[in-house]
Amino acid sequence: MSTDFVTKGYHWARQALSPAELLRLANWVDKNHGGAGTRHVRIDSIKDLLAPTGTVGAFADKLLPAGRPVRVTVFNKSNDQNWLVPWHQDRVIAVRHRHDLAGFSAWTKQDDYWHCEPPIEAIKKSLFIRMHLDDLTIENGAMQLASASHLNGFVPAGSAREVAEGCEIDAGECKAGDLLACNSLILHRSGKSKSNARRRTIRIDYSAFDLPEPLEWAIER
Image: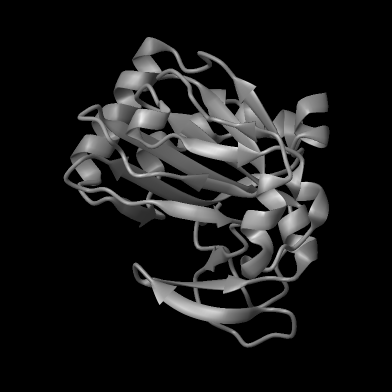
């Protein structure tokens, strides 16, 4: 496992996607995802890239053996579709149906399937990978990372900024084709784009946690 991933909570794989893979993913996003942020469970057309033998899946498998893709989110930030996100942790999972089990809380339904906060054991057995389809800079809203903030465990929303500002900050600038793997507890944020440049990013959540029955991950195996 990467030393960076353990100590900092994230690890870059620069220029990991081939030009052909990058074009394929960009076409998939442009064809299927016109909105600013879209949660997606129908991944058949890119499933081979996410599997352990694919470029993205192999990267995930080195950091989280036995992990499987469980959620996909596409971000398409531009001047017309623009937003900022303050310092926060992503502590929710996507499941097919709601079942009120101990340890699973804060249920919401988004894009036709359910999200909830699972026990911390589930978060500790997960990571997310960002696939960058365009160059990212501070000017077009790159995602910034608070290095080593994952070592704090769950951080209350009201304390997120204070904790993050006590960490070394990675500006998140990268090139199209770069992959970024993050511990699911890392604090991160992004500003509004101040540029006409596109900012298409695909986020894949991987988990090695077995959900208790009858819960099922939103993405089928």
